[in-house]
Length: 257
Length: 196
Image (tube, rainbow over all chains, first blue to last red; front, side):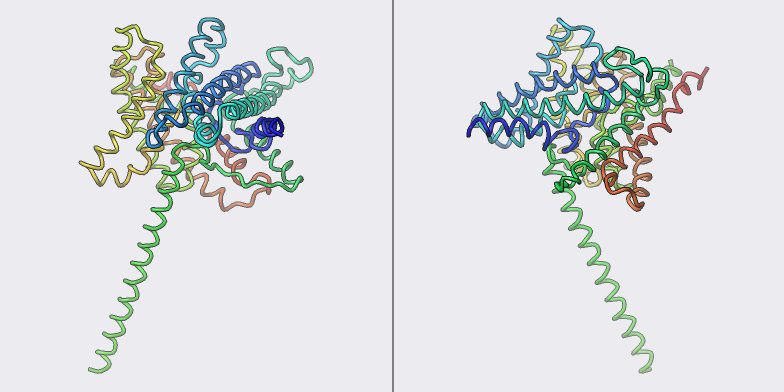
């Protein structure tokens, strides 16, 4: 029973709640690091390590961290793991460190990691959180490699650096450049939509900030904006009504005169 | 000297546009670009925070270098940016309420914007001096603003167009972003020849 639950936590991140393809989180690294399969793999692995570590620590400290300052605390914990990964890669795999460049440091602000801390790790025990981190990390990795495979095979005519004989003479170089990233990502999400639609389980997809730590501020904003707009509309309506009444009165006065 | 500064500025705005060429700050680019007002407000707020963040993080890195603590860069920068955003919000609220009313709502969202952290880190990696860093941040911020405003215009058209069911929402927006990015692709090589 308990094993089943762990398995479902693990699988949820990979398929049903895939962070990149279903929840539309972590778009920046998935677009930037999917130019080749190798960089996608390294980015995915680095993020998975950080995700598992931060989920475990945040979950272990969930009764210690005060609720009001939790986001800064999470950021410090995540940044510590990112720094550790950075130093390890710089020391042992310098070529990958150079390839990931600034995006390695930017794992800190990856909304998948903060999102999992906010949505899962702070409410669940350590072991479940580790499985959730692993599942989400693998989901991120799989999605990244999928995008990268399409881009590298069609755009550079190779797979993980190895040239593919036939396709390499018909490559489309734009796909490995910036515009191709947006295009391939968009089409893959559209294909996912089509596939899930057939199974009947259509989920509403939007750039929802579900996993974003500032989401509550966001929605609050739109709510207050809506109220403001409504108040304005009401004001103008009252004003026009008053004007109408005034006009009518004036008309009556003129008629009486 | 002036020529170099102009080059850095133009490179940030057009050639190395953070959103469309380097994929930094995609979340706000796709999330807040539905309406023109919101897009321009977000763009201005991001530019403002980038300038403040660079003004603080550049001297701070000198201190870290002096103490031989360069490896703390990531932690220190993200904390400084988070604290700075809060501080700017409080100061604006207290002293310039009008500006706070127009920018305030966007400020908390910027803390986790990767473009802000990205530009501060890139300024250090590129070895810019203080003035060059500030100009580069200004350029990147203006580039972000430009991309947001342009894309808000494109997007308002898409919302009213019929598109295949599976492309509705996110996918069609990404395809449109791809075409806008393609347009920016044309700027590659412009800056080098601009002042030559």
